[in-house]
Length: 117
Image 1: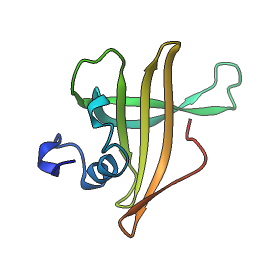
Image 2 (image 1 turned 90 degrees about the horizontal axis):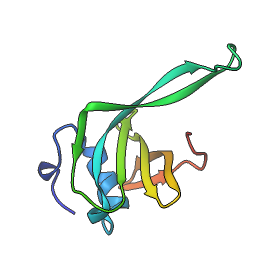
Image 3 (image 1 turned 45 degrees about the vertical axis):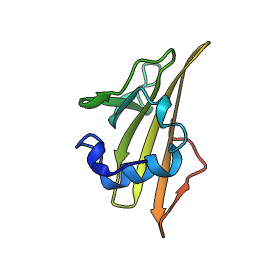
Protein backbone atom coordinates (compact mmCIF):
# COMPACT_ATOMS: atom_id res chain seq x y z
CA UNK A 1 0.00 0.00 0.00
CA UNK A 2 2.89 2.35 0.62
CA UNK A 3 5.61 3.45 2.96
CA UNK A 4 4.93 5.04 6.31
CA UNK A 5 6.45 8.20 4.84
CA UNK A 6 3.36 8.58 2.61
CA UNK A 7 1.09 8.76 5.66
CA UNK A 8 0.48 11.59 8.13
CA UNK A 9 3.18 11.92 10.79
CA UNK A 10 0.77 11.15 13.63
CA UNK A 11 0.24 7.58 12.38
CA UNK A 12 2.52 5.09 14.11
CA UNK A 13 4.16 2.11 12.40
CA UNK A 14 1.51 -0.15 13.97
CA UNK A 15 -1.30 1.96 12.49
CA UNK A 16 0.28 1.87 9.03
CA UNK A 17 0.69 -1.92 9.31
CA UNK A 18 -3.00 -2.23 10.24
CA UNK A 19 -4.03 -0.15 7.22
CA UNK A 20 -1.86 -2.29 4.98
CA UNK A 21 -3.22 -5.51 6.50
CA UNK A 22 -6.96 -4.65 6.49
CA UNK A 23 -7.52 -1.78 4.06
CA UNK A 24 -5.15 -2.57 1.19
CA UNK A 25 -8.01 -3.18 -1.26
CA UNK A 26 -10.30 -0.44 0.02
CA UNK A 27 -7.84 2.40 0.64
CA UNK A 28 -9.59 4.47 -2.04
CA UNK A 29 -12.75 4.54 0.13
CA UNK A 30 -11.11 6.27 3.10
CA UNK A 31 -12.23 9.89 3.57
CA UNK A 32 -10.57 10.71 6.93
CA UNK A 33 -7.73 9.27 9.03
CA UNK A 34 -7.17 10.30 12.61
CA UNK A 35 -6.70 9.48 16.26
CA UNK A 36 -9.21 9.05 19.07
CA UNK A 37 -9.32 8.52 22.82
CA UNK A 38 -11.95 7.48 25.33
CA UNK A 39 -13.60 9.67 27.96
CA UNK A 40 -15.49 8.22 30.92
CA UNK A 41 -18.89 9.87 31.32
CA UNK A 42 -21.66 9.45 33.88
CA UNK A 43 -25.03 8.17 32.74
CA UNK A 44 -27.78 10.81 32.80
CA UNK A 45 -30.32 8.27 34.06
CA UNK A 46 -28.16 6.57 36.69
CA UNK A 47 -25.32 8.51 38.32
CA UNK A 48 -23.70 5.26 39.49
CA UNK A 49 -23.24 4.04 35.92
CA UNK A 50 -20.36 5.19 33.76
CA UNK A 51 -19.87 4.71 30.07
CA UNK A 52 -17.09 5.41 27.62
CA UNK A 53 -17.47 8.09 25.01
CA UNK A 54 -15.31 8.41 21.90
CA UNK A 55 -13.36 11.66 21.62
CA UNK A 56 -11.89 12.41 18.18
CA UNK A 57 -8.56 14.23 18.25
CA UNK A 58 -9.15 17.31 16.08
CA UNK A 59 -5.40 18.09 15.99
CA UNK A 60 -4.53 14.66 14.59
CA UNK A 61 -7.11 14.19 11.86
CA UNK A 62 -6.56 14.51 8.14
CA UNK A 63 -9.05 14.83 5.30
CA UNK A 64 -8.16 12.46 2.45
CA UNK A 65 -10.79 12.99 -0.25
CA UNK A 66 -14.42 13.87 -0.94
CA UNK A 67 -16.62 10.89 -1.73
CA UNK A 68 -20.40 10.38 -1.80
CA UNK A 69 -20.23 8.52 1.54
CA UNK A 70 -17.88 8.89 4.48
CA UNK A 71 -15.52 6.07 5.49
CA UNK A 72 -13.31 7.29 8.31
CA UNK A 73 -10.73 5.37 10.33
CA UNK A 74 -9.46 6.52 13.73
CA UNK A 75 -6.82 4.85 15.89
CA UNK A 76 -6.02 4.61 19.59
CA UNK A 77 -2.68 2.86 20.19
CA UNK A 78 -2.66 1.15 23.58
CA UNK A 79 0.80 -0.42 23.30
CA UNK A 80 3.35 -1.46 20.68
CA UNK A 81 1.21 -4.51 19.92
CA UNK A 82 -2.34 -3.40 20.81
CA UNK A 83 -4.40 -1.06 18.66
CA UNK A 84 -8.01 0.09 18.96
CA UNK A 85 -9.64 0.98 15.64
CA UNK A 86 -12.81 3.03 15.19
CA UNK A 87 -14.49 2.96 11.78
CA UNK A 88 -17.26 5.40 10.94
CA UNK A 89 -19.28 4.66 7.81
CA UNK A 90 -21.97 6.83 6.25
CA UNK A 91 -24.79 4.52 5.22
CA UNK A 92 -28.05 5.48 3.52
CA UNK A 93 -29.91 5.07 6.82
CA UNK A 94 -27.36 6.93 8.96
CA UNK A 95 -23.89 6.50 10.42
CA UNK A 96 -22.46 3.21 11.63
CA UNK A 97 -19.66 3.26 14.21
CA UNK A 98 -17.68 0.17 15.07
CA UNK A 99 -14.64 -0.13 17.31
CA UNK A 100 -12.50 -3.21 17.88
CA UNK A 101 -9.21 -4.01 19.54
CA UNK A 102 -6.47 -5.70 17.52
CA UNK A 103 -3.28 -7.40 18.68
CA UNK A 104 -0.20 -7.60 16.48
CA UNK A 105 2.12 -10.58 16.80
CA UNK A 106 4.24 -12.60 14.38
CA UNK A 107 3.52 -10.25 11.44
CA UNK A 108 -0.26 -10.68 11.75
CA UNK A 109 -3.22 -9.06 13.52
CA UNK A 110 -5.84 -10.80 15.61
CA UNK A 111 -9.17 -9.12 16.30
CA UNK A 112 -10.97 -9.30 19.62
CA UNK A 113 -14.50 -10.65 19.24
CA UNK A 114 -16.22 -8.16 21.52
CA UNK A 115 -16.92 -4.74 20.06
CA UNK A 116 -15.70 -1.82 22.20
CA UNK A 117 -18.82 0.31 21.73
